[in-house]
Length: 509
Image 1 (spheres, rainbow, N blue to C red):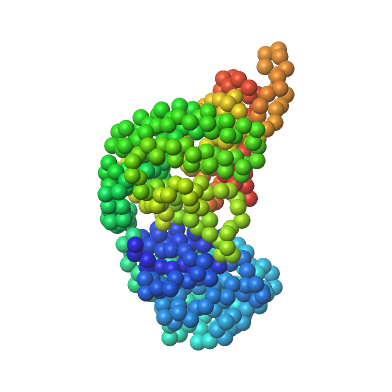
Image 2 (image 1 turned 180 degrees about the vertical axis):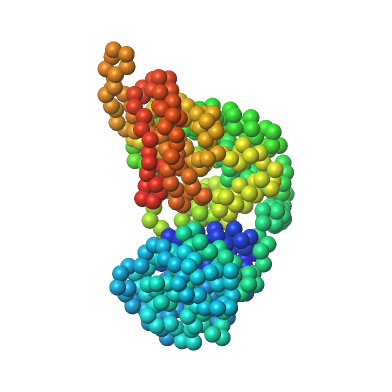
């Protein structure tokens, strides 16, 4: 795989966003923790140093060894990275009088500087720091200032090292993409060759070489990631790919049969396995969200292993792992704090004895969709909203019962079908319903009821790392609420979730 750009991660919440903005320029990049700098830097044409929640003045601040990078490769140091170079190479970093956070405008830009080509004074940037660079590093030249930040950007003479006190990767920095392009293309000479067609060609060739005539088994979920992985593998190895679609009893209403029907027209070798009762039995009486995920994961492995053993001489297990799964499972300071378990990351039980192949592990979600389009996969499948691996189990708060699954499947179907009917489905990144572990008093006809509450959730996002709730039309919400209460036995109240991520998550568990 072409490397091109190395991003050293110091723990910033924006590091993945740097990578995504770079990929949008058709430039391949990889994120590595600051303390695990790749040994072979000849594979990279440039380096970006990320921001960080740390202060460079703190005792526990990251201390990377940049001796093999600074002055040898083009470097763009962002926020903490810019402060780190100043702090360690002859400059001074001190606390700001006030925390500088939010929008600012570039009041001064040095003339004829390639980094700011096609960027005018007054351009909006995004600041997020509590320290400021009071003195520039040795041999540094100031490139830009804002009203409150004198040293908003600099370069070091005699080398292609640049520092930015602001974040070019966030969308609030209006010319951020231009600045990144100026650094990567104009200064570092990185080729813009990272396209879906190029990825398909490279990946199919690599899969052919890696797998040869051996057999691969893949668990299909009906979602975008596993479907694109399946078609890529099918192009590489044909009938040696064996796909298994497991019904865990926690899918959407009628999804098992409809997805199997959809795969028939794609030429894939797919076997459907209905293991609903096995999963529901394993989940009986369990309320803890993380325990539910683990029970589902372990049961899936058992079911999948049973099916895989019926295929003779299988050597590989294919997974639809994508890049955010990989990044979020490896923290700058070791294993990351568990927000939720990633079902594709963390290895396999020893007894499965299969080698793993993950053709999408270096792609972001939006890139997976573009690759799928390049492969000719239908827009209907590629446009499907993300659906959690544990299915409705993490949308039923509390313990799981067949009756609760039935209720939520009916509610979810009314909500999703309504979005399609109102032409709202494609305006939403992800939508679903949550069954809450509370009941409320209601009145139906002349009777007093005490039944379940459901919450509807619809968000807009690019890749799920951040998300905003969607302002759905009141008329749609009114119609949907009425249908749910009138048609789904057991529900007498519907609410709409207007929380953004962060601080909330997209799912409730």
